[in-house]
Structures are given as structure tokens and as C-alpha cells.
Image (cartoon, rainbow, N blue to C red; front, side, top):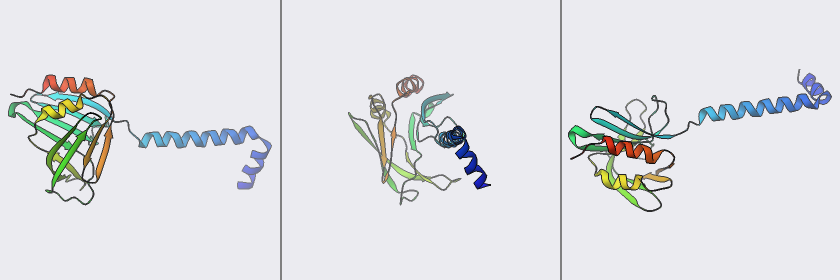
Amino acid sequence: MPNHLVSMARSSPRLLSAIVATLVTLALASAGRSEQALMWTEKEDGGLTMLSYGPLDPAQNPLFVLSCFSGMNIVVLDVHKEIPDAKPGDPLTIELSSAKAQSPLKGEVGQNETTGKTFGEASDINVNPVLELLRDPGPLTIKMGGASATMSEQGRAESVSKFVENCKLE
């Protein structure tokens, strides 16, 4: 069979080009499926307002989630990124930074009960410095121990604006 393909390819350079083009297209299509676009979104449900950066697929955890519990005057930040060598309950500094500013938040390492992966969580935070940083232009960087990620600017301003409108803190 391989010899048959070689002889067909020699007799028809167009066939060889078509095969190569098809293989390249299939490779690119499968690579595109594994890489999901991350987006900024804001959701409000009763007294809970959430600002998140992650895939639109609700089955997947977003990278960044800022949750505002309006009735309780509490804001929590969760960063779903595996933290190397961290154990649940370990103290952790979550550093959110832009080109202009930095906002370190004291938190701790949590663990997803389903996957066993660690993540960062800062509870009852002062949301104002975080919101100021989120309004800065350009990409944002988040660091926790040996883990880091960059979050794009696209769609952030609108989502932050909606979050501020719906997050009612006294």
C-alpha cells in the first residue's frame, strides 16, 4: 500500500499537495480545539456578583474569579492555577500586577476536591485596590508562589464596569 501512495504522488504532484494541505488543516483544527479562548465575563445572581477570566465552558474552572457577596459585604478572589509544591492551608500571597501597579493579597492554598489540584484563595479582601488595578490598560499578571499567568485586556473594562455596578458593598 505505501508503494502505491508513493507512485500516485509521483504521478500527480497536485495529489501530493492536496494530501499535505489536508494534513496541515487537520492538525491546525485539532490544535484550535485544545486551546480555548479565555474571556472576561461578569455574572450577577441575586446577591452574588462574579467577575471571571476563563473559558466560556461552564464545566471548566475560570483562571480568575472575583466574587462579591453583596448581602454579607464580602469579596473573595479565587485563582485556579496549580501551585507547585503547595499544600492546602499553606499561607499564600496572590500578586496581581499591571504595567502601572501591583496589588498583593494575603490568602491561602485551597484544593479542588474533584481534581486534587491546588489553587489560591483570598477571602474578605479590600476590593478597591484590585478594581483600580483591573481598570489599568494592558495585560495583567497574576503570581502565586511558583505559578503565574497573564490575563488579556480584551473585554475587561466592560466586565469590570458591570461588576462594580452590581457589587453592592457598604
